[in-house]
Image (cartoon, rainbow, N blue to C red; front, side):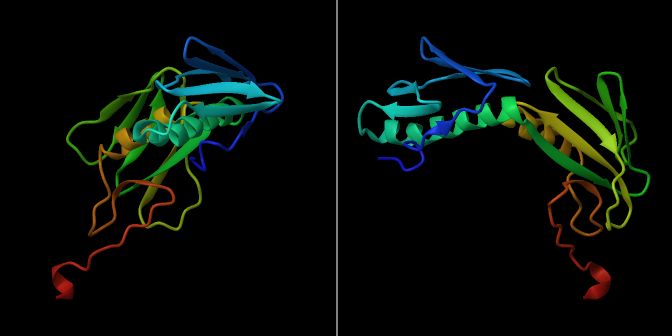
Length: 186
């Protein structure tokens, strides 16, 4: 049996979990999330815990058992505490500012980039003390859905991935860029 799948998920105070027609609805102080249950996987609330169970030991159901449990645990964590990703913008002349529902980015292209802020996601631009050469700003992305927060962070990062020679571009704040030496070092 799956080690991850059989672990119960503790339901904190203030969180309401309901299961209807193969869907799990999690409501908490930050919002609500709904997650579908795959075929062969069921979920039950037992003594302030959410437990996932599978019907058989087929390969597909074994694979989905732990995944479903992790996704439900992320939903409960999201509606209570939320998720956050930080992106550092590094480069001379690179800028980021929030204007209404758009994140305006100047990333060395001939035109500014307007990135729309999706509903349910909060984006802030701030300057944090970093020891990175040519540091410009930090973009903080927060929300209750771990997948959406991570996907939006990846979409913003893909607008200008870090350069391997000078290190400029958009990087995760915990990402380490190993710089190449270039022609003069050879």
